Structure formats: structure tokens, C-alpha cells
Image 1 (cartoon, one colour):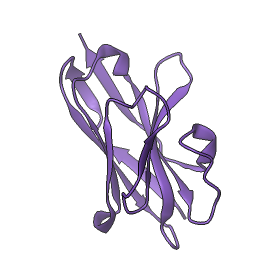
Image 2 (cartoon, rainbow, N blue to C red; image 1 turned 180 degrees about the horizontal axis):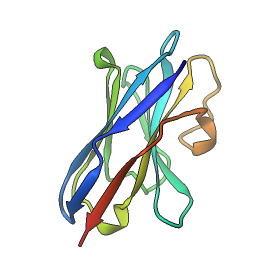
Image 3 (cartoon, rainbow, N blue to C red; image 1 turned 135 degrees about the vertical axis):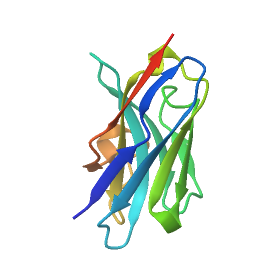
Length: 126
């Protein structure tokens, strides 16, 4: 059973930094692409920041997460989102997502991904 578990969220002041982590498990041959998306209060989910398994290629679907850096530690089955110079508009629940190896990749967009974590909340105060 595929599981994605996010951590690392919290409350920070504007200008601060956070590193979000996503532990993934249950993949038979490993995920193919993984991603971060976010959903701000009262808004639709947006993003994403996407990375291929192995970390050789990263894509940023739109400008929402383009300021941040996605990375992977394959040996630890972890994916990260390094967020610096945070702004109040970055306040959101951040979700980890993945698609199985062999599934079609339609680009760094929400509809590509079939497996999702429960999210970790980030609050940035001014």
C-alpha cells in the first residue's frame, strides 16, 4: 500500500525558512515522479514542484512553488521542499504526491498524480 507522509510544517515569521519532508513507502518498483503542491485557505490547490525518481530532473509547474527547491534522498525514501524567504502568502497546507512507475506523466500538474499525503500546514506571519 502506497503511503506518503509529510512533516516539517509549522509557524514561522516572514523571511524565515522551512524544510518540508515526505517519506514514501509501499511502491513495488519505486515512484516515478513525485511532487509538492499546496492549498491556501479558501483557494484551490496549486503548484507544483516535481522531481523524477533519482533526482535527475525537476520541474516547476507554475510560479507558486518556483521560489523553492525540491530534492530527493532516494536512500532514505524521502523527498524535500526547501523553502526560504517565506512570505505570508505562502501560508497553506503542503501536500506530497507521487505516481507509480510506468504510469503516464502529463507534466507537473495536479491531475498527473494519483497518490497523495495528508498534508503539512505552513503558517507564515508578517
